[in-house]
Length: 95
Image (cartoon, rainbow, N blue to C red):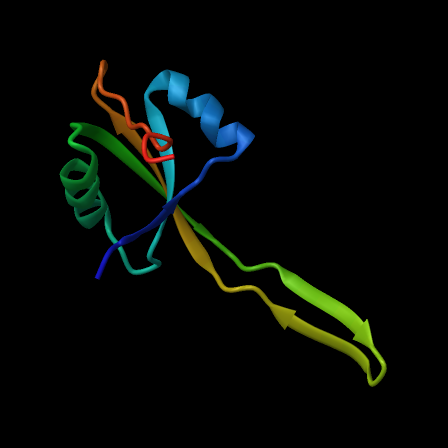
């Protein structure tokens, strides 16, 4: 089972690419060792540092005929990966 779900390609995360940092959404149970091993294997880069962030799912509600329905989006986890200077991860190569 893969620990990486998908890369995060928001404006803020893309600005980190200039510093050699890349953001990924990962499994909530993944640890830094598993994340490092998988990124080095998939992208062929050398990882020098990893920061992980656990996120809470947002509360959502909508109004229907029967009244208000509320729920919660799932919790998640992000990883900010720093690669060795000169290494690049290209998310858009397969497009």
